[in-house]
Length: 398
Image (cartoon, rainbow, N blue to C red; front, side, top):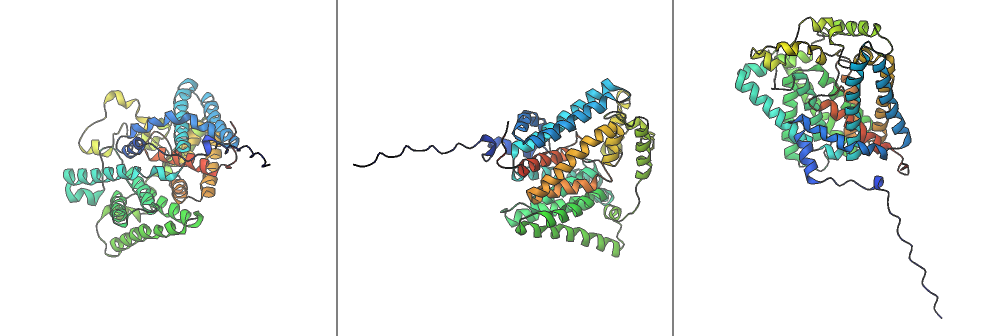
């Protein structure tokens, strides 16, 4: 007599957090549009619930970061205003981290390249139409991206091109040339530093050898351009700026930031309230971006009272220390260090390049402070992806 068949054992259902993410088509279009229409990144607030999918240690680190920002605001000279400003900034940062957790993979960031190429073409077209070749030889401009921002966006585009595995060589070459030309014409040393450090970090820490070798191409092109301009003594100001060893007054700004922090060591002076303390910059009064200034458009009187909001200490750590004191800075350093560790553990070359490259630039600028035209938000999104990638795969506790 045959034995009865054993009952079928149902296959285990994977936890939703462990299932691969298949983005809808509209999401790629939204990501591509962000560089051109920066306010689109506010859609990241819809992903805040994704933070629940992180392991406990990550959630506790993010909680400490948020709590440190709130506590610091309460210890400032103007706690109510600081709490409002600091709370909004912290919530925006958490939304960007959550967007990274939602995306799960750095490959989801690829559509950014198309929007960034639109920005580059706009910058070249605007500069040539309004100032001609002389404008490019002076420094590339854009209607709402500063030259330094253009340089950093060009660097992130180069990383997207270099680490885009499987992309056709012809369009990667064209996109890479546009990005390199934009970086050189922007003439900013900070982005060049980010390119070098981020690319070398990816070369050393990433695990995919096939994509790592491409980092030497843009580095070689930039180095060759600098050498040729220097050796032939060409009068191309943007590239000459790259070999200038002056700090452009940053030492005075750093001294002002330290003096501002000393007025309120624990909680700082408050988010977005450090401008009046940066006397080296603030003495110039309200100034609009270079494009508006070049067209003789003056700062409106009503805006003058807010001119200090966008003045920065040109060093991310001094900026956070000035605005949030040792309490807020401790939260930033904790989540920052966790992000760098997560990126290195992920062995993803794009994540490593972004997190480590921005870190180098943060010593001479502030490129993680939100809101921005999208480059600062990109850093926090990359941190979110890194934290997701570094999580223990068996950890899905709620």
